[in-house]
Length: 88
Image 1 (cartoon, rainbow, N blue to C red):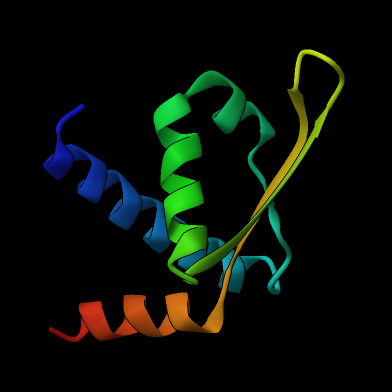
Image 2 (image 1 turned 180 degrees about the vertical axis):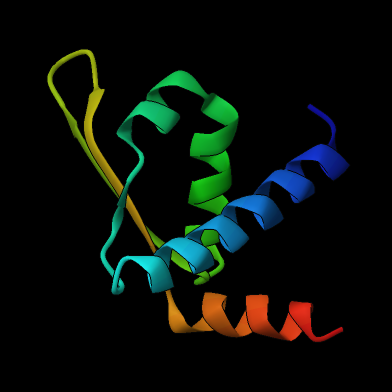
């Protein structure tokens, strides 16, 4: 995946989380299957978390360091970012 594709994926995920947030009363989204099956999505969520746009909670256990829980939720900065981008 090239850089522009990664940017597009991060933007897509942020908009999806924005929509999910308001459709589900702010509940975190379970993304366990997504991040186990797709390393690019895992890295995209991690990047968005590092930027303060979302909260990415991952529980890893065992000697094999397997992911057994993964949730994301959009933060206020992420909401503002989506809304500001939609008005441009």
